[in-house]
Image 1: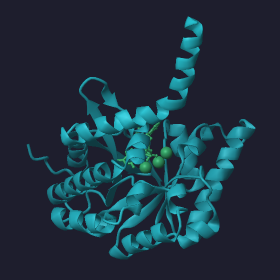
Image 2: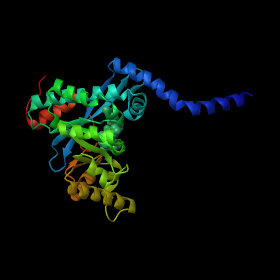
Image 3: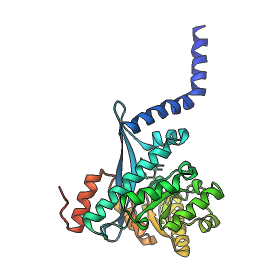
Image 4: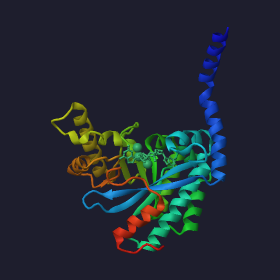
Length: 290
Ligand code: C2E
Ligand code: MG
Ligand code: MG
Ligand code: MG
């Protein structure tokens, strides 16, 4: 009898846990957002040939009072599921634009070219999204040309309404990057319909790429994808960024293939704003304000 009950509970729990988990996390997210527990870290995008910072990706973090630091992989799906990604994304966008405007004011217009957050498809469906972006640019004084929004291919495939929003952003001067490129249902026609300026080669094609021609078939296949992506990007006039570079051999191999920009732990980890300020101070030779 007891075992029957336990089985029932396990079955029931298994069926409901994801939903209950999302709902519970949703409440926690709302509370955490109101309590100011979210913050933004910044990962440099680096010119491979020189090591210079040319841009930055903004990534959200949650400092939870009892769970500690929670990774976005855990809470972004719940935030998307509950709609809280809209206010959370707005917070990340405002914070990133405010911080980038401050860096440009402190270190000059050449300190870095572009900065930006990831944007979920749920945000693109929000009728206020474009107005929110305009208001944030207005309030922070950051020129639209400085902003890159990172989107995944699946987001871009969501039909005419989203595509029209993306065209409006492009007309404002905002740049769009296709994130995790090569993992979704990429097609040439999609890339041509979508006003992207940048493709980010997914880390899965960078992993093991340094093993080279004489290495495994798997490594050779990744190299073939990396080569195809850069050729296609070149033909369409798009910039490329290689993601998830973890050693110098990968950086070298990617450069040989024609990649000029990269991102990854080997180059720099995501860091708090204060650390990025110090990095820019070193690079520009301008003393950072205390
Ligand atoms: P993503 O946009 O592809 O971001 C890159 C992820 O790879 C980041 O993880 C970054 O910390 C990690 N990474 C960078 N270099 C390396 C490396 O060399 N090795 C490894 N193993 N990882 C590296 P993070 O910050 O945990 O974010 C994970 C994903 O969560 C992001 O993937 C993005 O899809 C999503 N995300 C993060 N912040 C936001 C946000 O503010 N809004 C939305 N909508 N999504 C976000
Ligand atoms: Mg990204
Ligand atoms: Mg990415
Ligand atoms: Mg990725």
